[in-house]
Image (cartoon, rainbow, N blue to C red):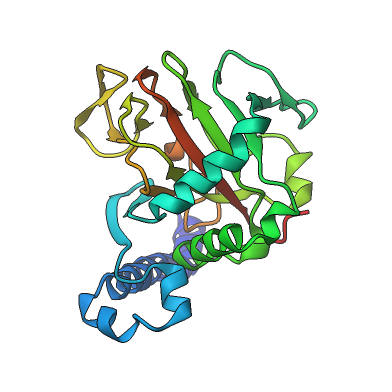
Length: 267
């Protein structure tokens, strides 16, 4: 009994420190997003190239969940940027793959039925891509060099992505830049019925996922909007609550672009 009490007394300061750190981090992040959303700055930023690149005053952040951490950025991409990503992707679309946990390689699977491609290292130097990646880095507060190549995806009617985590369960991929910390998912088209991004462990309500009512939160794919969610918690551990899925598309084509961010420089 005495040893247990002594151990608890030693752990209490550490646990208090970690808890306060998590609270402070959340408050600082919220303050950052509120500052970006402050209309009073817009008039002063009209002639500021950096402000234009970040779309300050245009992007509207909305925190929809703290556990797991999810933020929707309305108007994150311009209509022209959305069309640009679709244009460079369309000629190179291939059947999407998932990561094989045994080898770390991409394999075809009925878990994911979309088609997609990756922006290559040369295209990453293009001004439009650089602007998007800079914006992702600033709003996620994760260095650009920690980001993987942007992946552009197309979901046609009846296509989907079953529930999954973005973090890795194999050791091969972790060697290339550490674990995945967060994901920025950007929607490139309007007029899609279904195709929501579903987070079953977020919130305590219900939402429509591909025409079916399910528990959790669903984000509708609106052109230019983006969803930022974290695969790792503030404690540095992978967050099982970050499980999510791409609901079946009922009508139209859903195009999206995904950027995964790692713990350190991505090789």
